[in-house]
Length: 134
Image (cartoon, rainbow, N blue to C red):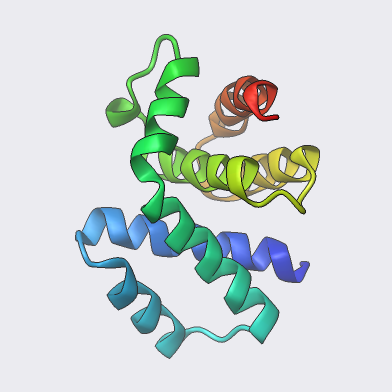
């Protein structure tokens, strides 16, 4: 598994912990790295994804909701919602990563951590979001 894939998976775990535990992002990040290892590149990228997603959460949720016609963001499965949020942040703010890479990574992570249908759901929403990114 590549460094960035592992970083994305770690970021998903931290975002899930932030949401479910209602803990501050800095507390979650500090505690996560206390128990899990990563090289500096992986840790830096994971931290960027987590902090960036949390910092832009309102913008990200609004964008996701605008393309998710039949699903309110609050009714989405938490894992799916956090994969979408993380990938949306990456699409909107991490310009050095090609859109196709972001979409493929989100789909693969959904296959690993989501339900049987998560990957298709995430693919549909991210395809629409990618279409609005300049």
